[in-house]
Length: 125
Image (cartoon, rainbow, N blue to C red; front, side, top):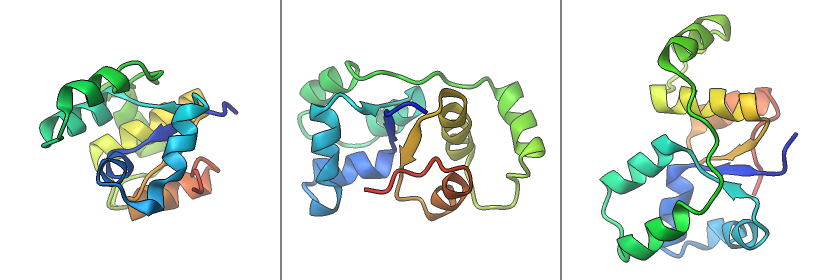
């Protein structure tokens, strides 16, 4: 398993607001262990972020894990029985990507946490 940790949108938002609950993110960044995903970047870009330019200039320097195609994600939903569990298509794509790349996910989403724990993909801060 890779030492990289996929940082989900909610964790980034708390980090940008200076919440102490995500202080570990600074260490992951300094140790080059944080990674991102196109859909996380998209969610962040859709929101209001102070110092947008400097934040996104730094974000795009992180490693990106690949996005899984929709057709594979749709099959993944069925084979892994991920339906009816309160997961969004973004959550499922992040989970499928993390599973394929063998990286852990740091998320605040309770439903995604439960799925990640079952596969030993949840990063415990």
